[in-house]
Length: 124
Image (cartoon, rainbow, N blue to C red; front, side, top):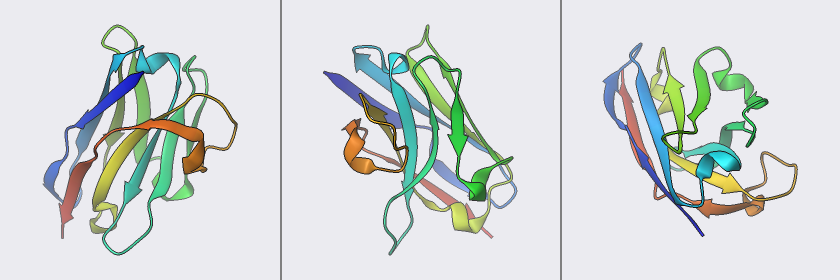
């Protein structure tokens, strides 16, 4: 069993930065492929970025390349999402999720465990 808790969300002005954390309990979250998703108001939840259990591979959607960075700290059993140069369109609830198998980053159904989400609001 893996339990995930996100933190680090908040209100920030455009151009600012936030660092989200996804802390795992139970089996180490950093042992698994972990993804960050977001759901903006009135929109479907979408994949944003992910990192493999080894940490050797990361993937980003085009909209956040060069702006967001995913990384992990195995000692703290935490996966982080560093978000820089934030824009109003980055406003969303951000979720982390752990995938136990499969190979489709974008497929929510392949993620077995989800956190409760953390709100990120970027003001213009």
